[in-house]
Length: 205
Image 1 (cartoon, one colour):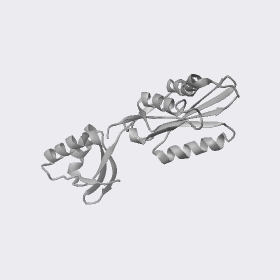
Image 2 (cartoon, one colour):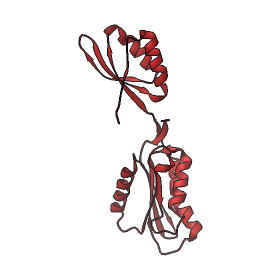
Image 3 (cartoon, helix red, strand yellow):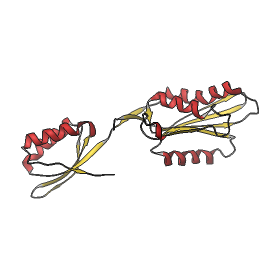
Image 4 (tube, one colour):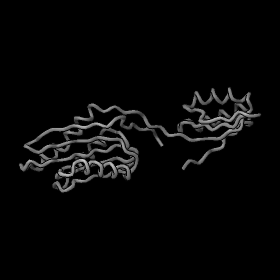
């Protein structure tokens, strides 16, 4: 699982176009259910709005299976799909956009709707701050005190860290290692301890 960028803070943008008010929200979500819960919260906040159009990428920006969008009553292809296309262009994962429209009674036309539903997201993209989401594998080890220095040095080189340690006659340790470094980490651990220190994989799913 390769790292990808995720949004650090929620953002919003509001504008009026031909008497219609458009309010765009951008948020970080983890999974489809959280996306649906967020959408419901926006609908509750804007009960009187005519449309609540949305698009989300629920996982990695490369995972097309975990994406979705809706025009929510607007002409087909004028809201949800353009919104999703913009989100995909950011290469940010776990992100959702909701655009609320309070209609002003003046028709915008197909092109006008696409521009209106796209513009808010484009404005917010310029303000986005992101951080990298990495993936880790956890291991459990039973160490002698003398082996801890070797383990700590290897973790420092492998983007890893000690999650917990129990210091008795020996040390029971739970660690995590960046998935990209696991093969190298395990190989060096075996070589440096001559196979005496074994990391047992923990299944956290």
